[in-house]
Amino acid sequence: MNILVTGGAGFIGSNLCERLVSLGSTVTAADNLLLGKRAHLAALEGRGDFRFVELDVSGPAGVDALFEQGRFDCVFHLAANSDIARSHADPSTDFGHTLGTTWAVLEATRRHSVKEIVFASTSAIYGEMPGCIREDQGPLLPISHYGAAKLASEAFISSYAANYGIRAWMPRFPNVVGPRSTHGAIYDFVGKLRRTPGRLEVLGDGSQVKPYLHVDDLLDAILLAKARMKAAVNVFNVGGDTRCTVRRMAEIVVEESGLDAAIVFTGGDRGWVGDVPKVDYDTTRIRSLDWAPKRDSEQSVRAAARWMFDQAAA
Amino acid sequence: MNILVTGGAGFIGSNLCERLVSLGSTVTAADNLLLGKRAHLAALEGRGDFRFVELDVSGPAGVDALFEQGRFDCVFHLAANSDIARSHADPSTDFGHTLGTTWAVLEATRRHSVKEIVFASTSAIYGEMPGCIREDQGPLLPISHYGAAKLASEAFISSYAANYGIRAWMPRFPNVVGPRSTHGAIYDFVGKLRRTPGRLEVLGDGSQVKPYLHVDDLLDAILLAKARMKAAVNVFNVGGDTRCTVRRMAEIVVEESGLDAAIVFTGGDRGWVGDVPKVDYDTTRIRSLDWAPKRDSEQSVRAAARWMFDQAAA
Image 1: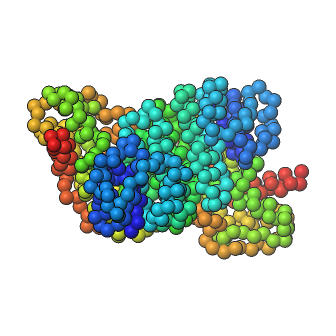
Image 2: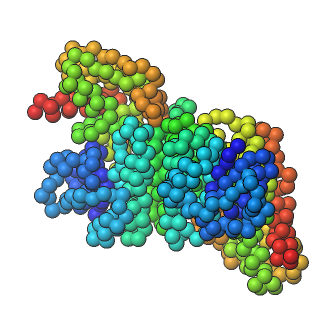
Image 3: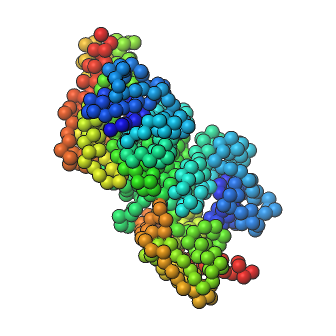
């Protein structure tokens, strides 16, 4: 298959590109390198079945030209602003980079008759969660612009699927961790410990609790769903049945650091405006395909932290 | 109250402006006059508590200047492309005029610290409906770009409410009919009967069945909800407990025309790509406020048709 991965130099995107090439696909990675890094794709550089294109995916003209030339069978659309905490001060980041990229990709998909799209959606579209929520439940009232832009993207992918016969898969990601992550709490904790080895300041009171998933497990789920789910639009929550508190995550990062650091909480029930403090969603749909993550939430956090410290030591 | 109504020269917008002025508010109507008509506001022209501004509400700079100068307490955001059938060929209409207007209004609302927004949402956000759907049920998979742009708008209104302390009401409208309607099946039927008095061609097989609501009943519901619903974000379906088939609607329009016209169906379960053939949603939430429409669906259709023929005769 001839596949485009938008956001291909990002954390999840670069892992996805490696996986798709290893499975025999020809892959084009497009990325504006704002959050992604060319170095993330080092293992693929020079291969005949892979190429990298530096491109702002929110620009319709450039995206259209890429599709014209690329003749893709399928698009994995991951390009987005993944820095949720930042967008409170500037909502245009999410409108442009998270929704605007989707709009440009959908228009090119329509014009060039690409028939498959896989979209990186998120648990953030649910907003505050009243309990363990299923894919067909609502209300969908996101509290971050990131969640809003992802829900807006889902909405247009759905209408494009209905209007132009495009098949869509929209996995809703939990917190995803692992090699090359460019943001998120573990990333922040590791950075803070480097700057102040004796003290780890944690935003909130540590009680926030969410599912964490290793990127390798995420990719297993997405590729299995793409092979097996055959509705016109396939929405599914991705995750195991475990969660981890921010307090426990901080402890794990300190353990993996080998440092004797005091953990200090800033207080409050959440880390920032737009942070959903308690995330829990029903993953029966994806698990009914006999998928289960190989690592639970704490193991995923530990593996990600260890990778970061190993990188720093190397 | 000092109120802005976007799309204020449209069908519902002009009726809303009259109602708000009659209740004592100072009202500014903004409209690009693409679908709206200046004549719709004839009853308000020259009053000191009303003014009309011709403006493309999808342009952030113009909207920002309007807010700067207007110092509004509340925005009723109705500006949108309401021509659902047209957008299959050009999705950018809905992205720009239905979602783009919301984006411009939200940014101005944030910058100028306006604390209340009422948004004209729609049953179209639900897409194909599995049964009688409640506000907190999903999935939300719209099949028209109109529905997608309205859901995308809801998403950002929700995140703006959470981030900036804006209170939002998002009534999801059914098919709304009544004086000054500028589109929709009744409008089309009346136009067709004028052109070919002996024959009324109806898109689809006539089996489509939806709730119809008279605009006066809609305004009652919205203003009651605004006074009584006090959550940060208030989403509610609007409608009574009756529906009307397209076949019956065609019969009513022919009856009101006084013509002896044959009704001919083009066939198929829906009128156009993106048309949801069977609409049914739960209106318990709004009806729990002791609101009920004064006319059922057939009476609403008949009143709207009669108004159109009366206008033509006048």
